[in-house]
Image (cartoon, rainbow, N blue to C red):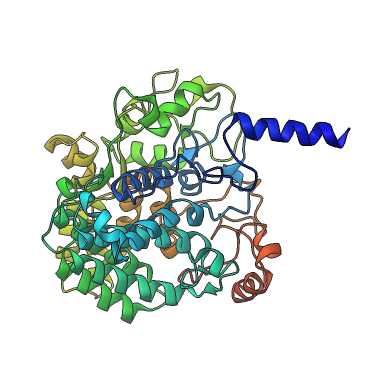
Length: 482
């Protein structure tokens, strides 16, 4: 092409758009990038991502957790339920954790923190951001084990962060949650908080409950530390009533903000059935939560789908209940029922004072709170359920009963149910016959992102060595010991 023609064309374009050669004005400025830290909007989006982490979203389905926990069974195809996928991306670093770092930096920066004040006092924003950051890091380390933590979120200053030991991460998260809860300053409540409307008391209860859950994770690997942290969390305040449940409320008439299972039901050709593991147990126990959790099969009875078995006839199994897949059906993160069951186990562990009579009180309170949470409680049905042979408290098998009822109460919160099963072995779950894991068993963790072996090889290799040399679903993380 003639060089004169190219030069003439370039000059014409520059003249037409009023830009002189050598002066490109705002051509490299993103007009969609805000110049001020709109931290409240970031917090709103972060909390929505938090809901997707547990409940899924129409853009990011989360199915493997309730399948690992055997709350649900796949129908027309078998993938997550037979553990085909082994590696998951660290998407939280680029998403919610990065946004939280922006909120934290903005509220600490001498210049920007004044610009962030329209969204609440700097201290209150920092406290919420630190609690949410702890939540995300806890979620990640419980899935993968050792992960980048202390060197993470430094951007171009460190593109190959070290993988920190899970024990060190846990120790720091205990500290972070305590400090964050103490950071609320009584100033203007945070705007953009769609979880608790900026209520500091509820955020403190959330932080305390997180610490309680973390402490119980240490029951086998470091029971002395677990006992200390459990009691400290109790003293500082945890969820004791369903009104304080940590939950995300979707909207009834907004498809952009609807429960994932509602979305899946509308557009997915693979509805999920309840597993026969769960249905058979609930039928035997005359559990009034079953009609909420499941629809009846085509023959008018409740029938669970055998786990890991293909079934193209949806009429033969109890699909996920209409009461759980409404557009506005909430996602539960942590609940009063979960805490009551934790108290019951803590007595059995001799972490808190009590006798088997106290264990039974906490245990029954957990069942009652769960039935109330799901809107099915009445005295008659509750009394029938808790006097069935499978539920009636027996001190000799109390731990198994506590963890089994905790598992039922965690329905669709697959992450927590899976974590508790890994920690305790209860309830007793059987892997599918065609499990794709190395040992043919239920997964014990998630594999690291495949690209880490290429882009962060030295640190990745060190982390894998601490796993025993194999990065897969069958390796065990620090607190998950036999």
